[in-house]
Image 1: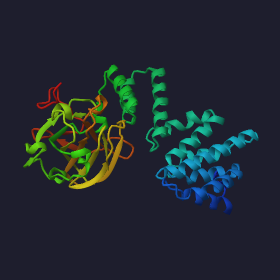
Image 2: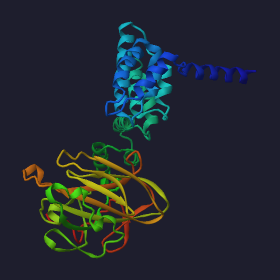
Image 3: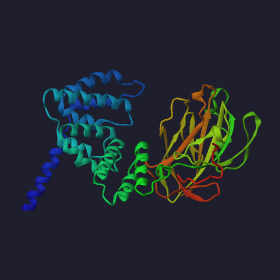
Image 4: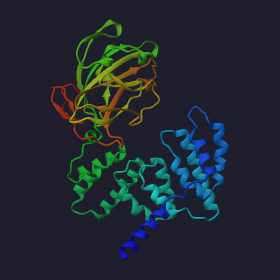
Length: 395
């Protein structure tokens, strides 16, 4: 009998944490908002629907959070604004938000990371203990914001304890980091405590590549011209480049901790130009992979002769992990080609011509079982940097 009562109690708690089904009017309003696209389609219907949703008050909070889809930023913005309006109205009326339901939502990874983050902020605003209770479980979370907070929280604890195992603890925490600044910080702390941490290795940067160029990109239109290296299966052959100069592939490596290949130094400075980089990555097994490329200029990515990403844009900034292509690496060797263009702008800030490429999982973390082929034909880990690469970019 005691077991039955315990099971019943657990069921009562679980059911109480589940959001009540949304009424028909709320469902219709959410559907209209979710139909909005970035081109503005559906905006006329979304305005009245938004007002209806907000008028529902607290009961519409969880259904609205559940409706957020990060793959549709436009509708997500409408829904997040509705959440803000609902919570402000509840606060003004001195009504508490449903903490148990918010916590259940935050810990359910099927929901959008941005919505879970909002729910987490709402929860800790009225339950200070929730932070210490939840953050340890977010170290490996798919939400980058929740993971970041979890890493910061854990680091604070480790530094306050300062126990003998700090080196091992920091190395373990380093494995969970994804953000550039946190990776640099943790790597520094690991090394200060006698441990080992490779920023380039952790991020999975390609540090060995064959380069060829420049090809002609007249009037800044090189992005749309498909030169033969675009579908290369190996770094072989000769080609006619800019000014009919004969071009051959040449092996290069970089010792930059963030895997940057500076094409101005490696291929000389050019305008209205196109260059290609070819790297070979070996996978122990078939592996789903994200290819994150950063460049201040137009760029394309090809994996095994298939284009997986392209962005035709010049000198609008190059934040870390600016662009992402997705593909599945086959077991064995995989040929990755990056096309990097340069336009005709001559301002000092427009002279940068470079790229960095890394391979990672969907959270931005390292993938097991991958190696790259170095200049000497031997496999080395992604992010591997020699003390003095034979063909390192000129300083």
